[in-house]
Image (cartoon, rainbow, N blue to C red; front, top):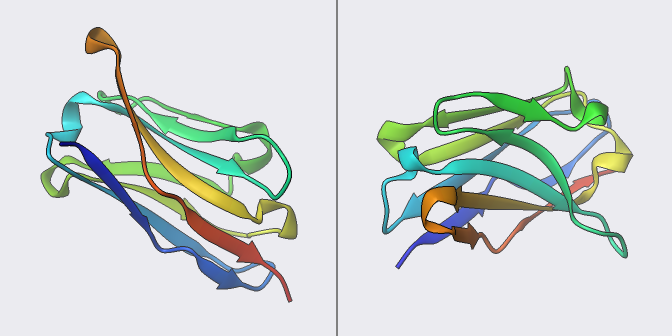
Amino acid sequence: QVQLVESGGGLVEPGGSLRLSCAASGTSFDIYDVAWYRQPPGKQRDLVAQISRIGITNYLDSVKGRFTISRDNAKNTVYLQMNSLKPEDTAVYYCNAKLVMLNREYWGQGTQVTVSS
C-alpha cells in the first residue's frame, strides 16, 4: 500500500522559510512524477510545483524564484523549500504522486502552512 506523508508545515512570519517533506512508503518513489499542491481556506486546490521522475521541474508563476522542489530518491522523499514566504502562501499543502503509465495517483494528508506576523 502506497502512502505519502507530508511534514514540515507550521507558522512562520512573512519573509521566513519552511521546508516541506513528502515521504513515500510502499513503493519506489523514483518512478513517480511528484507535485505539491496547495489549498487556501475556501478556495480550490492549485498546483504549486512539480518534478518529473527525471528531474524536470515546473512552478506556479507566483512562487518562481522563491520555492524549490527537489527529490532524494535514496530517501524516497520529495522536498519543497519555501523562501520569502508571504501571507498569500497560507494554505494546506498536499503532496501528489502520479505513475502515468499505470494510471495510479496518490495524495498525502496535507500539512498546514500559515504565514502571519
